[in-house]
Image 1 (cartoon, rainbow, N blue to C red):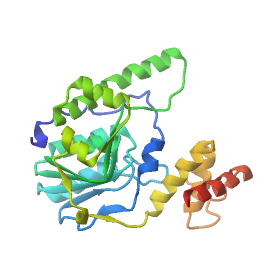
Image 2 (tube, one colour; image 1 turned 180 degrees about the horizontal axis):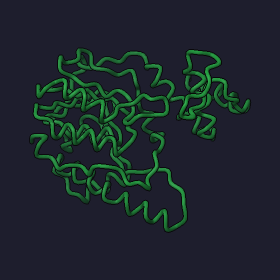
Image 3 (cartoon, rainbow, N blue to C red; image 1 turned 90 degrees about the horizontal axis):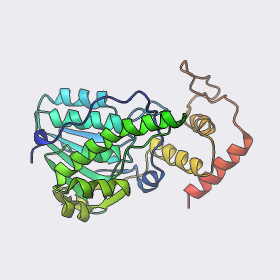
Image 4 (tube, one colour; image 1 turned 120 degrees about the vertical axis):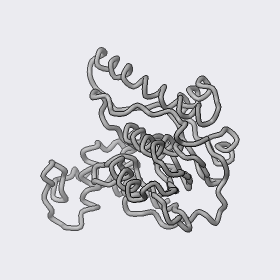
Length: 282
């Protein structure tokens, strides 16, 4: 199967849908330190969340488009270790890889969850680590409004779920019904099982994967997930983590309203951060 024969993903984003946090279970499983032991010469690394995040990090479609342009049609290896993120950005990246003129090899080194699993499906050849995982599920968002608003949002999400199921089904040969059931159940698929079910072509050897220490951004994301579990409001989590990341004590808020290190933080939430850090070290 060539990547050009795969179905296209719907482009764009329904205006009613808001951005969402990463799946907590995916964050728990994600080791941001997993990398390729010896990256190929023409390679693209997807080792972060999908889509721009609060801190301006993350893998975006514009970044992948620029990387592909620089390769000028040469064969490319896409190394993936991501907990997912913005599903619509993931669909856009999938389309970019699907339309790329060179051969695309995808290597799932650690985790390809949610939006990252869609990106992984765009390869001519998909390789996965024996201890790596794919995770597939339905598109989900945080939303608010009355019952009519929520009904509209549910209706707008349905075509994207069907499009993702079509991609997984086309890639694997599994029926749409079987794939839809897996998506409904938020299914994690290990390396060997991914090959058996057709989500990947072969297993990677152990010497193709390196497990280094977590990057700072990966550690911050895990802290964010831990704080969310303690019930810390999102606004307080952002203030705390932005203060941790800031390299300039006393920095003021950014022009877009992003909290700076000097924003007042609830002392109770500082205690929650300390508790989360203690849990993170266990």
